[in-house]
Image (tube, rainbow, N blue to C red; front, side, top):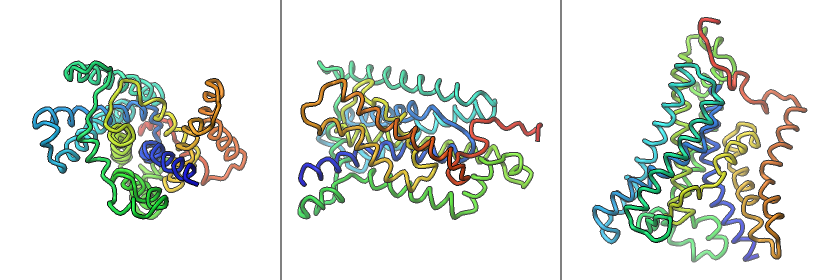
Length: 329
């Protein structure tokens, strides 16, 4: 049982970046835009937080950091960096009506290069012998958990031993599901994603909703990168260490059929599938790589199943990936 609880605990931690990334992408796709730049946005969100934290720790010293500022500075830096990426995507795809797939892939490439450039620069400034930078003091503040978690045994560890960003991710997903399904703003946003021409004729500002959903979604996704660095990776930044978590977040959107509340459980499943090979004894490298493919295989199965059922509630927004030209309305 101890090994099972340890696996579930690690799976939840692994799934939090995926949950934040998928929630942000769901909001974007509900507006009719397919943002394949989510991996790059998560990368920029992570490195932006690292830059802010590094400059703050260098200015006051790791032993003298203020816990509030240690959280606020990287958090705000991450949100600003992710917002700028979202604005770039919106300007290209909403205002200039560029191809969404190409723009998203370009943002992913740009975001990865941006992170590696500044990550490498910070590593040189820190003078480390290893190709990484460690922000232990800031990470310890981010990873603060409920003090009573350890007193409740395995159950307490499983439920209450996470940082505030982990619980915030769940709250954000639930709030996003409520907004999309229970509010007028969510109704208008879904209308824009289904038929922007009809929404425009009804008096809804289509471009405003597209900008709003994409920018908010980008900031949420960026928090996934911040969580990975300061919580999951214990404040250690290494170039290209983020892996394919951004792509897993996009796959999770399809798996949870564009519902943020289902994404909460899907993220735990994907997180578990991503690390389960570490808990299987006597496994070779080739089998490990096959097991790592499981989340994508599951996504394909869900995609095929939902397509065969042809139920509207399990399908993506009708105008997903299509630019809106008001002149053609």
